[in-house]
Image 1 (tube, rainbow, N blue to C red):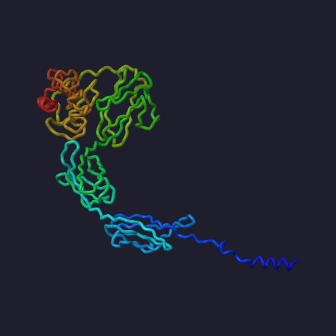
Image 2 (image 1 turned 90 degrees about the vertical axis):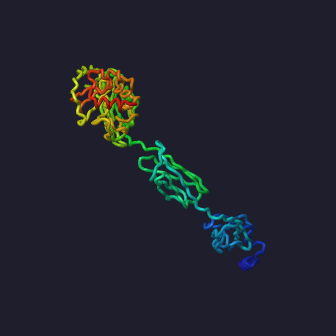
Image 3 (image 1 turned 60 degrees about the vertical axis):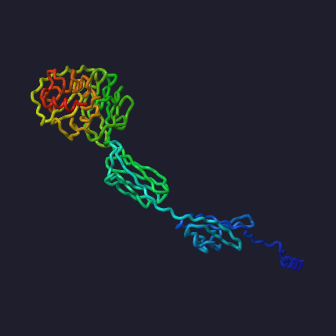
Length: 425
C-alpha cells in the first residue's frame, strides 16, 4: 500500500505543464506624448505614456528613445525627453518604445521684441506737470524696472517684456496710483496724481452727566458732528470707538489745534481746542458739577472795555460765535503771509483757508459771510468776532468792517486789511 502511494505521488509530480497555461506578457499598443514648448529659449520636459494590451498605462519616458524631426527648431534629449525651443518654426518630437512610436507636433514662435511705455504725469488738482515722480513696474517679467519723470513731467520705460503688468506712480505728498495694462507694442500711459490729504486722527466726545439734560450737540470746526443723548461711563468701550447716542467721534486733521464746542438743550456750553497726533485718539469728557447739568448757567460776563491800540507784534487772538466760544485764529501782521498753523494769514490753515468753516476768510462760513451776524465781513453784524491777547485777559475790541459799532477796532491798518484782503471775496 505504501509503495503504491509513492508511485502515484511520483507520477503526479512529473506531469508536464500545458504551454497554454503559461502567462503572456502584455504588448505595447500606443505611445502618447505630453508636454508643450512654444517660445524660443524655453525648455520643457515631455513625457511618454505607453498603453498596454492588458488595458493599463505605463510612463516610459526614461525607457523610450527620443528624436526631433527638425533639431534646428526644437532639440530633444535622446533619453530624457527634455525639449528645448531653438528657433522659430515647426518640428515633431518622436518617442519610440518597444518599436512603437508616438509623436507631438510643436510650433515655436519668435521671441517677443521688447517694448517701451511712456507718458506724462500731472497734478490732479492744478493740472500742472510733475517732475521727479517714480514710475515702476510692479509685476511680470519686467518687475522692478523704474524711472523718474523729467523736468517736463514725462517718462519712458524701455526694454519691457510684452504682456500684462502693473505700473505705479508715486511721490511724497501724492497718493500712489497704479494702472494695469496689456501691451504688445510701444504704449502710452499717462497718470493724474491726486494730492495726499493731511494725516488724520480721531476726536471723541462723551459725558458722565446723568441728569439735567436731554441732548448735547457737539461741533468740531464750527460744524455739528453729532448729538449725545445718554451719559457714558469711562471704560465702557475702547477709546474713540463710536457708541450710539453716547459717544460722538469725529475724524480731524492731525498735528494742528482743532476747535470744538458743545451745547446742551438746557443751555450749558463747553468749548476748547485739541491737537490730535497722526492716527491717534483723544476723548473729551463733557462734565457738570455732581453730574447734573441742570444748574443755571453763570451770569454773562460784562462787556469789557476795549483797550486802545492793540500791538500787532504781540499776536491778536480772535474769538467769535455765540458767547464768543469759537476760536478763530491769531494774526501778528496785516497784508502778509504767515505759516503758523493757527494764523489767519496762513491760507492753508484751519483759520486762514477760504474753505475752512472756522475761517473769517471763507465767504460761506458764519464768520466770513456778508450776511451772518457773527461775521467780521458783514457791515451790519451785531455780534462780530472779538480780539483778545493770548490768555483773554485783555480785550482790544471787535474785528469788523461795521465801523458804526462802538467797540469796533478803528486802527486804520486793521480796517484796511479787513476791507482790502480778508473780506475781499
